Length: 171
Image (cartoon, rainbow, N blue to C red; front, side, top):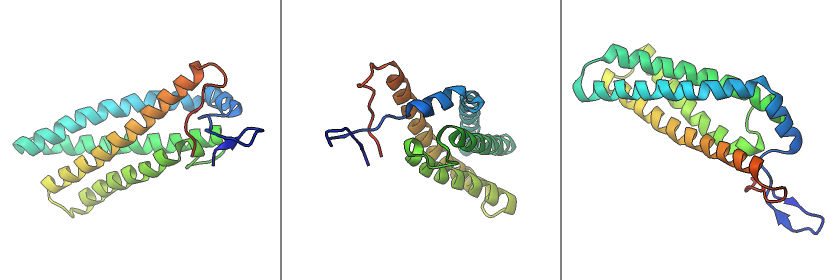
């Protein structure tokens, strides 16, 4: 629900309260997230190329498989450290107000990546179907990464806006 002024008029909430912003800036987990996110993206791009190569040519299954497993392990790492970051900044492990929908969608991303590991481990699908599942997981990752990039942009705009104009839609 939007915050209210003394006049009772609804106004959108800022992304971070001043205290949350201080905790965010002081947390070592902010730097960890800032390092892991681009690493994950680079691994994603390499893996995407390997998966598409396999699907197009039938060659490079092992490389594609290893790359998807690596991408998934990095995803798990960034999700765990992201939860620690959320706890440090918002005092919640997940689903803090400013990142609620990003966290909800992250569960789908995690679910599809985990499904890939399960079908790989138990041989539940053939190699081509496994790679198609990996592409589905990657599609959700791209959407989720976009959500977080938009949130990062909003945080930067909020930081540089004059006081009183740094409002973004709340939840």
